Image 1 (spheres, rainbow, N blue to C red):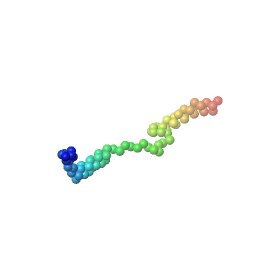
Image 2 (image 1 turned 120 degrees about the vertical axis):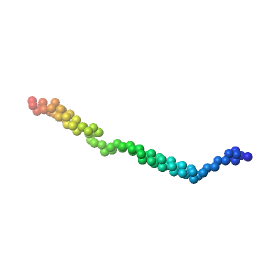
Image 3 (image 1 turned 180 degrees about the vertical axis):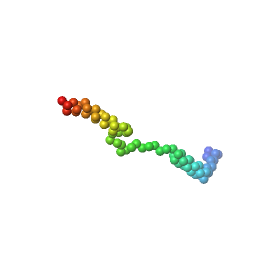
Image 4 (image 1 turned 90 degrees about the horizontal axis):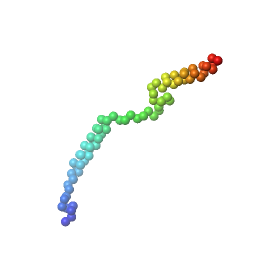
Length: 75
């Protein structure tokens, strides 16, 4: 007698399908419940992600003007 005949395993395919469907539904609910990750902004701005980048650039350009250009114009 073979070993397979001694320990027969009966598999209920309908039960297996129900379990698989329940797993799929649970995974879909879990995926729907979690917030999707936010994709980075692909376009991006010229000045970068900082909110005050324009103000910083204006201050730096003004300071450079005062230090380098204005003295040349004055004398």
